[in-house]
Length: 143
Length: 143
DNA sequence: TCCTTGTGTTGGTGTCACCAACGATATACC
DNA sequence: GGTATATCGTTGGTGACACCAACACAAGGA
Image (cartoon, each protein chain N blue to C red):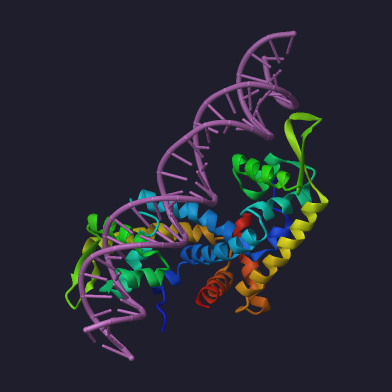
């Protein structure tokens, strides 16, 4: 019998969340590494897909990322020709981000790889349990 | 209206989990800092409370922590007189860990402070939703 | 007796969340 | 029109920490 964690922690949502997220982080890092992506690349591509054209600052707000971290990741995506970044003619403080066709392909590629990890992650849950988990997490995040 | 994340991510359990866990991590770090504890101190105290007397290696297995990290944290708890650490007379490879009375007090103190954060974390969920979340996380972890 | 595994220690690295400050600019206010 | 404040992006930086390897000493199994 493998060693289980203490009961006190198994009843502690915060510990459970960070533990599961650490597992998830390891799995998704493998996916991102194999896709030649960084940890936040997929999230940034998703944000630009839905809200583009948009600014780096807006992406940072939507994803709760530090502006420096957004800038660094966007520079990498730009270098990989997945994002087009240009000064905003209407507001010189800003850079405007757009997905390129290659960025769209990259987004879908990572999405498919994540789907496998996702399915494996929640495979012990039935459909209603999965829905309840997602709903609960969305509620917590939305506050 | 604040900036919401992209829908694609709001339907992605792995992103939701890591996002919520990051929030939780910030909140719990505040709790641990104010209690003069490190990030894993509480978990280690919980493990020794339930399974003690036990070895560092066992604590590491139960909490999925690196042996070096367990050793470092246990040294800190020992220095704070929260854990008693002595060689195992039956197996000189091992050190045996026990909670001290001060460790028990510290455990309960952190527990109470975490309870506040926890309640705030899940306050948007009703009782059955909380139970579903905990159950789902336990299932994912248990696999 | 020898080999494998376990335990704890020591030494170390790369990632990354987070912070501050600056220059250029837009906006609000008087 | 001038001034103050806020925004955006960039540059520079730090501490925490997850993770890894190797070693010495020991127990257990073949």
